[in-house]
Length: 225
Image (cartoon, rainbow, N blue to C red):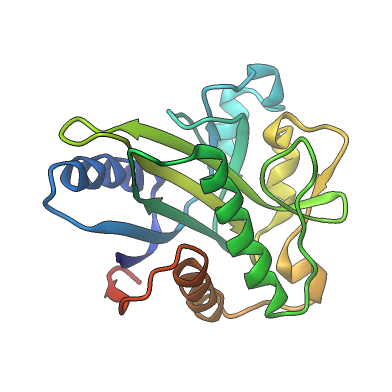
């Protein structure tokens, strides 16, 4: 069972702090698993595997354009978050038998199945994480596996970022995920029209339930806009 929180648009730091607090509460048995769905203000995040040369603007230029640059504790390289992009943070206790690779493949499967609802053919690309449409990435995935303190096993944080109606020009300020040879795309670009974010979120929730075999009723806590 997991509890869904739809947070609207939220600054990146606020959602990051919220994740940390919820992971602790899950570890202590105070909460069930959580799924946070959010859009962020313009933010570039650098994971633990990032290289500063993948930032293509100076610190001053990022500030001038209203883009916050944040070093964070997930895996992976540099990526962009912003309005029109649906970011999902599953905070799941994987237990003693939790398998990191299997978990990542399941997140990819969720996005692939969501895209199918609009007859978009998403796929995996060998050697890379995330979901692709041909040679263009439509969803990035970066996860942290937090070692549980009160239990054995790990609790996940961070997650996926699906480009729905994202302004793709912001990706030109970075080398996304450190990948120079391939581009990025969005559902809007593929369909040549904007999509209702609420509809996309509903499909994400449903596919999370199916892929992660959550057969209980989803509890939805709607906050923010």
